[in-house]
Figure (spheres, one colour):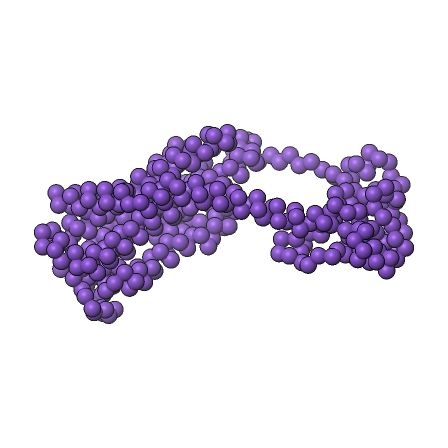
Length: 403
């Protein structure tokens, strides 16, 4: 075990001193967050800019229905030909046509000199107040108070009851913040587990290509080498995740957002990270050792990355039903339980059964132990394998044989 600690210390120090480790740990979250924020503003600005030429000019209308009240800003035209001419001459930014059966159909035709785009094809850039103006026209014989209420027929104030029948203390804002926090934990765990596992796979493949392992194995057993690498790079991944968590916490405090995450969530996050990392790291190390170069190692180990990322495909279901059947099934599958259980607990801490958490950890712990046993056998067989690709029968024999 002494030699395993020596390897662990070497792997940890080598990893944390890499320039790219520092960049990914400290700079990447800031750059990525800045890019995401900037792209959001750019997208919003682009949409506003594309609609500005329409919104800044007056709107025209053709009233075939015959019930519209006069408007001081909008221009009335006798027919579509006149409205189209004004639009082509850039006198107006758009025009609408109300057909004779407007009251029955509710449809109006909107014409603009714009090409349809992905973000604006379903929302015509009409000036503010068009809906209110149409409502005024429909209800012009009704008193103003009734018209005002018709424009906003109800103001919902929802009351959510718990299982005892008492009103829930959580409001809509807190629910939204929990959902955002759950998604953040989901991405944090997914990124941390597979980033650390990728370091393992890359380091092993490079050492194998450079024939460094032949010298290393002369003084250490394969099992000790594997455990040392898992511990060293696991510690580096844990350090990385801790820094990311602290940066997120500082961001929350700085932005004065209500803190809705319980301390237990952070403890669970570290536990699930360690178990998930050891599970995927050992499998990637074991199966990756069967490749003759880095590319083959990545191909042989990529199946585990794909399986581990499958909860991303059902994230909508997790948002809508964190305690539903699909969410619970994914919580019991060891390859998807770390991210799924963290998501469920953060988004609904009171509703997540303690039994589900304990069961997922027991299954994950058992699966991790089995993965280490299987991967250790593959690792021993594959470390000195050069120039030959093992077949499925050979891989199966190495997996089931203890020695």
